[in-house]
Length: 339
Image 1: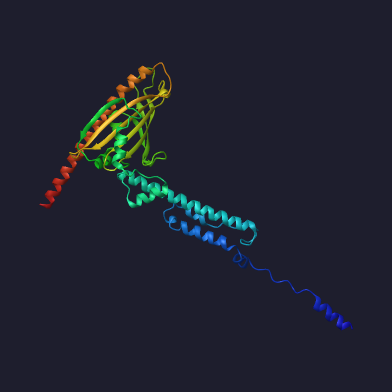
Image 2: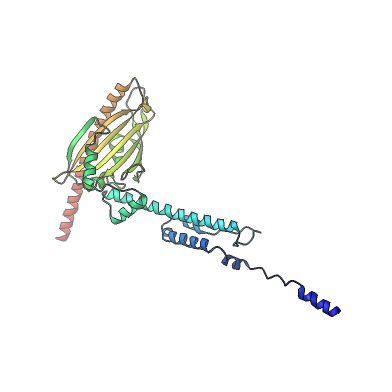
């Protein structure tokens, strides 16, 4: 009887608990959906990482170093699932931002090149959400003939220059211009500490480039210091082979009533049938505050800006002549070498 009772107790006892799964086994039982999302995000940024700044791509994908005494990574907990979800979302956002920056760079190169988008440029424009006008000729005529805003003071009217549209841009306006605006300001106007930023894609226009020129300008005015800091905000648009527009807003600081007005000027560059370009330049003194010295400010500004534009025309002509002379010397040397 005693042996029978022992046998019954041994048969009714619960079985030993199964050995707890190791962390790798637990990780394999994780959410298949989250693993798929993470794989998809990693695939999206795989190509972008090759051009990403050092440290950015690696930081987006690196796993955090476990802290001393912390529980092993993995598991089926809600915290682990949420963590992986956030990492995948961060990787996707990084990929989108990187492609956006690439699109901006491509568009800037396209606008500098002529405003006519190549297939790559059009693809970049679609990603970035900006497009140039389909009718480039119509867009140019509309911008050229627009009377809003007004530019009351016309200094140059279709003045001829012996260079092409592309040559004008490469010599005077591009980021690596041979005769940039900074040289003119320093060597002709006597400005100092001239700093010109590179062109960047405008956030407010469909196909404009913008840049900033900061400098110190000599002042010859009553109750004003001998020199004052100033800023030019420039906006450039090129309408393919139809023409170019450069608009500049100039603000001079540290002079009396400087916060009451600014100078707004516009330069149009249009190709001519003879193979050159026609230059038109106009400006207006725009007042943003009332002042009893408005008439004095306007008169002084008109005289100074008019002189500056005419000096710039002379600067352009001399520079074009210098480049033409260099080209002739180079061509002559090449002919002698061939002979």
